[in-house]
Length: 207
Image (cartoon, one colour):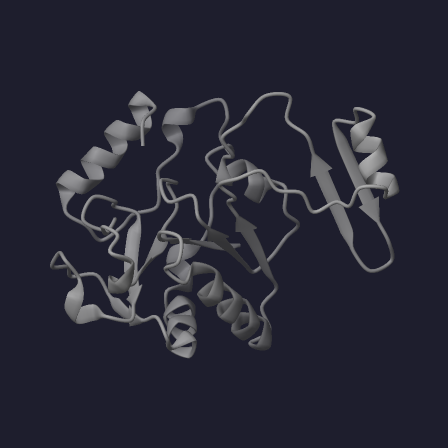
């Protein structure tokens, strides 16, 4: 399974790009899943439906399935910060998993950046950013040796992912639960100080 993240501020175009990549990877014969982070309360259920009534009665999880699709809804007793690795573990087998959001996750990711948003960039300080997709490369505020992709050319971004597929082979940090230190994060072509900073953040619980 290949996993790649897409980070960027609201309005940068993450969802549009991920949508386009799903369609193109699917057309190329790949089975694709998506994990998306939501910054607010959301509900895909409908009041009055049986599944909603079960939840309202206090069910921790409700699974509803037909011969066409399945949905699982889980209620947390307390506010929880979703972990993308835990969410990926919930998925069935796929060729590619595209992770939207989770900008601080220890996943190799493509940063989405538009100059018009006025937001700062993440790549100078994040060793897991392996490429930048932008519509204004000349306006990037920090020099970089990372690949710069055309945000408006989903075909080119898809081709980039397929060329880099081996790099995105996924290993869950929970594969060796008895020895957390055995987990080696995927390598990124970045300066040593950026790698060291990320390692320090993982060990002290920040980031």
